[in-house]
Structure formats: C-alpha cells, structure tokens
Image 1 (spheres, rainbow, N blue to C red):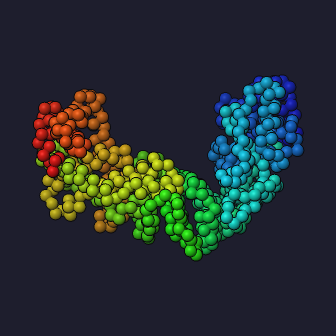
Image 2: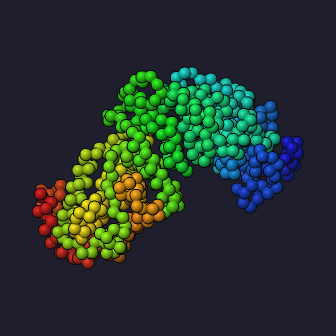
Image 3: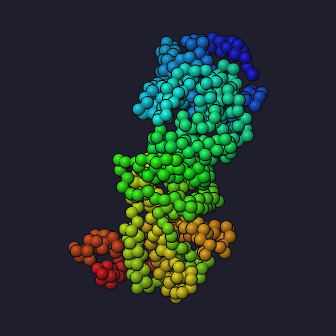
Length: 598
C-alpha cells in the first residue's frame, strides 16, 4: 500500500515534468495502460478490504486528492456506498459518490472549476441540486463531469426523521454517524482516497458482503420507520445479489406492521414504483414477488386504494387519485398462480433465449391471474390435430372453414375485449406505481393476448371430429399469432405455465416436454412471421394483394365497419392460397361479403 507521503512526492515529480494539459491523467501517479479500464498491474490486494482501481479511477481519485491538497487540506475525501460495495464484489461501477467531512459538495466543485480556469483548462460541467423537502430532496448534491464521467459530491451527514415524513433534517456528521444512518451495512462502506483503504464503520459491512447477508446498520424497526422505502430496497438487493435477509430484518417487517403503515404515509407512489420496477427487471423477479407475497406487501404495492395493507387499525380510503375501479383481491390462489407463472416465465426465458425477462413481462405474469380466472388451454405439439410444419400448417383448409373460423375468432376476440376492460390494467399501474402508460399498455396487451388465445378443449377431450376441429383451430391460431406476434413470447409462455399449473392438463408432462411444447409454438409463430416477411421481400405485390380501399369499393360505402374484419379474413385466404391471383381473391371477397353483413 502506497503511503500518502510517497504518493505526493511522486505526484509532485510528475507534475513538475508535465504541466496540466487538460486531462485528469495529468495528475495521475501512474501511467495509464493500454486498456484504460483494466486494473493497474502494479496494485496488490493486501487485505480483505483492499480494492483494485482501474487506471481511470486512479487518475480521477488522484486529481480529486490534488484539488483537496491545494484548496481544502483539512477536508477528507471518501467514496461512499454502492461503488465500494460493487468493487468489493468484483463488479465495476460508474456510480461514484464522494463524501466530504466538513464541506458542502458545491464548494468543492467550485475549487475544481477554479483550478481549471487558473490553468486555462476546459472547465468541468457542474450541476447543483439544492435540498428541497417538497420534492423529497433532503440533501444538496453537486454533480461534476470530469473526463466524460460524472462524480456526485455530498457531505457526510446525520439525519433526524419525523413521524410522517421520510425526508429528514440533515446536519454535518462523522463518518461513523453517516454509516449508521444508511439503509444497509453493505451500502455503508467507504473508500478513503488518502489511505486507499476501505473503511467499515458499522463493523459488519465487509462481513455481510462476504457472507451474503442483507442487514441494517441499526436496529431494523427504527431504520424502516425512519424511511420505510428501505424495506423495498432491502428486498431488491437481496434478489439482485442472491443474498439472504437477516432474521431480525425479517421479523421486523413481518411483526411490526406499523412499518407498512409508515410506508403508506411517508413514501410517494413514484418512489414505490421505481423500486418495484427495479425488482421486477432485476436478476430474480420471481424471488422479488415471493418477498412481496411473504411480507404482505402486494396490496400496498399494486392496488393501495382501500388501505388493506395489514398494518393494523383502520386506514382511510385513498381519495382523489383518479382510480375508478374497485381494488382487486390478492387471494391465496391468485398469489400461487402468479408465482407459478412468473417462475416458469423466468426459467424458460433463461433456458430458451439465454436472457432475463423485463419488468413488463414479469408484471404481466403477476397480473394475469388477478384479471383472468381461467386461461385458454393450448394443444400439446404432439397432438394428432397439429401439423408438423408451418409450411403445411394451413394446407387443405377450405374456403368455408376460412370464413367460419376467421369470423368466429374475430367475434370471440371482440367479446373478450369488451368484457374485460383492459384499460383498468393501464390505470392500475399508472395510479398505484406511477408507471408510464406505454408500459401499462404493454402489460395489458400481453394479458389480452392470453385471454383471446383460441383454446381447444374439444380436441383435448376427443369429443369433436379431429380433422375439422384441427382446421378450425389452425386458422384461429394463425390469426391469433399474427395479431399478437409482438408479445407472443410472454403470452405463449404464460399459457404454457397455466397448462402445467392445472393438473388436469399438465400432470403427465415433464419439464422437458413443456419446454419442447413452448418452443414448438414459438417456432411456429416465428415461421408464420418470417414467411410473411419473405413473401413481401420476394414479391411485394403479393403482400396485401387487396387493400382497404379495394375492399371498401367492393363492399360499398355502407360497409365501413366490415373493412377491418374483411382484411383479417383475406389475410388468412392469402396464407392458404399463396399463388392465388387478385381476381381469385376478389371473387372470394364477394362470397365473404354476405357473412360480414350478418
């Protein structure tokens, strides 16, 4: 470990040889290797608390220390929080917060810009966010852009909370006080820029990081009553890092239900929504949902209109939030189904696509049983009514079957969409977790796709003519896949999960068979979409050979409502008759017209 004296001697020699020329590297104590993001080759991990810096980080910290030497020699600089945690975990981080022990961040930022002006260097961009309790900003933060990266400058602080606000009164404090007021021990670590060592003032941060434990620095009940949002943060970090929750933390949330009541009083819906979005887009959204269920937080998070949060006592109903729908109930069955769907979605995506699910897909899996009591049944890929290849999927389908099956699908879809007000999903996410409308609409579209899937119970029960039912089902399934292709993966996966949840339909299938069934359906949808795209490229005139204007002319001026339905049926006809002419299609439209007017 290099001593501070040694570093300053080397720094002085370095600066005497090279005047400042505009880069942070000008004040670095070491030359930067070819790979600027690689750890310095000469550094050693001398203790469990040591951190290997990249050349860029070393240059930045040397520059900040030099500014401190010139303008604020009595000030101590420390990196706080997430950067220290991530570096000790072996992960890289660009989230650098510099904590000052006796100076406001804005003042130190002015020292940086003064240094640059005096030496005629390009000035750093500086932004200062003032403390504003009305906007939950309880700390002044100065953000400085240096060499393309950003650094936040804050002061060490202690906090005092009132009963009805998570925005505290703030004062200067020691590093020990600052560490103790933080949310978790693993987030309360410091890296001292002068000693180049990690400082663990709680005495448990490094230990918990090594053992994989989520623990609060102080007694958890008081920590969470001061700022109840810390409950959701603790759950999120446990899921993100695969850590376990400290038993005292678990007991506090389970037994001290006033914490949940405090969350409702003190935490904005926006802040709750941000944490939930991060939880459901993280590495283990299924575990995150399990925690929300375990700690009875689902009502609070997703539909807190009736105050049913289990915190004890009567809570006045939330008014004036613009939500017109009654709260939906998280029954035990709904929670079990949601957990199963989400687990299956997360696991299958990793298996088939080697990627994680989004928060939108996770929310769709959770909301599906909340809005749909029963899901359509999908046919296994080895059922006798299924064709083995998308190329021959619609071979042999008659015009009568096209007309009857297509219109039946469209009628059924319109009925379902009318009966289930999917705008409730959008409003629920907008009002309660403050998600933007596009995210809510995407969730609603996935659930709409699930609800409108053309189920095939008759074929599974063997009570219908296989060949005729197969043709009808193939037509409907093709229309469904084209209608909802943009959300086909999550919708089809949740439908497959529902089949395995229902013992009557999934009890004889192994996990491998379920995976194969899901893959077969996804491949089929992809083949449909790909074949349509190839046809457009090879022969653009064959794509929508009969457009809306032609249909309107053919059907007459009073058929405006039937145009969209006619185009959907014609899409099927074109798929069944890929070599058909425009004249053939117009003749079919004439035969279709009476059915559209019924």
